[in-house]
Amino acid sequence: MRVAFIAAECEPWAKTGGLGDVVDALARALGQVGGSQAAGAELDGLDGLDGLVDVFIPRYRSVPVPDGARAVALSIPDPLAAGRTLDLQLLIAETHGYRLHLVDYPAAFDREGMYGTPTTDHPDNAWRFGLLCRAALEHLRHGDRPPDVIHIHDWHAVPALLHREGALGADPAIGRAAFILTVHNLAYHGWTPVARVPELGLGAIGKADGIDLLLAGIQGAELVNTVSPGFAAEALGPDMGMGLDPALRARGDRFFGILNGLDTDLWDPATDPALAAPYSRADRSGKAACRTALLEEIGLDPTDARPVLAMVGRLDRQKGFDLLAEAAPALLDLGLRLAVLGTGNYEVVAPLRAVAESAAGAGRIALMERFDRDLARRLYAGADGVLMPSRFEPCGTGQMVGLRYGTPPIVHATGGLRDTVIDVDAHPATGTGFAFESATAAALVDACARFLTRFTARGPAWEALLHRGMAVDFDWRTASAPDYLAAYQRAIALRQSGA
Ligand code: GLC
Image (tube, rainbow, N blue to C red; front, side):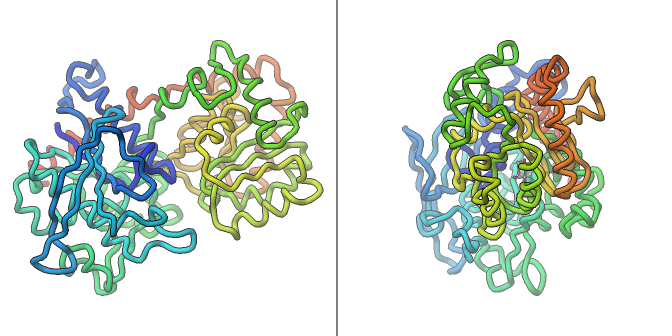
């Protein structure tokens, strides 16, 4: 099989969230498990991968171009001027275990912000991501071996599928390709109002008022998945379906969940260069040094034994950040401390900032409003617990990192969080963290109180909890990447049969 990815993000070149981690780690893992040599028993009956995965992302202003990248000139039809072409280039490098293609067109991508400014989306995003897709297809169809599978991630890559459904479908190299759409975030649809639809270069598509690109992808791809079985089930209902639940239900068994993995080479406290000291499941002694160094770095007293709960990520309502702000005074009353890292909108952050600046919060809440890869790693290692009170969470990465770093997660039992964290009070022999059922500040406080009780008691039960968490195998190569290979094969068969 020849597989190409089209996506808006891929770490370390471009990332705002979990999408970037997943595109990078899955592409690499497929290269590792997909080769017929390495296939192993669990891949019995599956075709291997032919060569590396081809990954296409925009060359945003912030993207570091890898050393040795070669430039390939490319012309694509200008969506806004019939008969004219746009000249752009691809920067191509084999790196990180896949073949990276940066679509380089400064007018679209050399500007501030990947999706927009802090206050608003770029108004021409349909044009920008349409160009990404068209450039990827143009390169693929002129290559020596056409792709068998085009794996599109979120709404940004859906124009590629619409091209196959349109005129480009007559091109044998594109027409034969099977499409699989992975929905990482069902909340972002790529709604394109009718005035902007021509920018896609696809003619008059969609409804009278415009096109919902994610919906079009859900309807048209051979297979559609999301990033955990738990969220796949929730998304079928109106509460979590974000208006797309009828379309998802209509796909029957062609919509399903594959749990994300974790890149266990990139996320390993034994080798993580950002940490003050290495540690492992067998020898956790370095974790104390990580805690001391972290607390000194962020201005919390390292000699204070009271636990520090960390929250890392986009500071928005999806992530339950407002719940944390509401719960913060009660958490301080319990004797907990908080360390929060991320960027977000001012209204969501303001209430927590107010608590942090109050007499009760001074010295006990560290609020860091920025994006800092290395500090995130030090938080996962040096904190005592990881908070993820997300309202909805297709999968989530922080809870998996927390488990692997011996820092128990406290999560709202939703989507991928429910699939990956076992509540230790409900399941004392197998639990790995703390899960609460309703997305309320009171339920969050209650779960943190349960954390505190166990943390304070310490002893063998606490040790066993950490050990179980650190032992969970989230490696992409174990289950997730083989599941994607199986899905690719199924998508190819569906395409070939015309079903
Ligand atoms: C999105 C989802 C998150 C998921 C990530 C990667 O960011 O919100 O739950 O882990 O995509 O799939």
